Image 1 (spheres, rainbow, N blue to C red):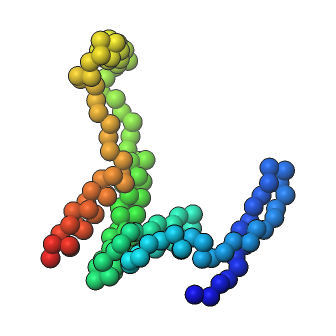
Image 2 (image 1 turned 90 degrees about the vertical axis):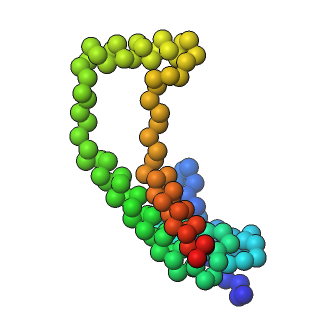
Image 3 (image 1 turned 180 degrees about the vertical axis):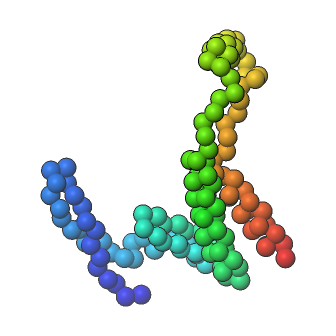
Length: 135
């Protein structure tokens, strides 16, 4: 592998810009033996560990699909109207109930967290990956 010198731009707190040399090999030397899938786009870098070469194309396609599905889910959630089916008085009573329950150490009745869009997509992709490895 040929050695190239790259420069990273660093801006100090005072606003002074300077370029610091960075060796290209530094990042790649930390990867272990095996096949790796590297996906780079502006502001994001993703490395998939120990990929089976036979499935590299499908893995790359699943990564792109996962990104597209996540972005679509986030966009759809932004356009959902914020409508409450409870009146303000009812919401006050509900909040008091949750406060009293938590004071007693109970978590019954408290609504769980909604999984993030990326978690939903990743679970679907992992099922696809398992099926791919079976066959």
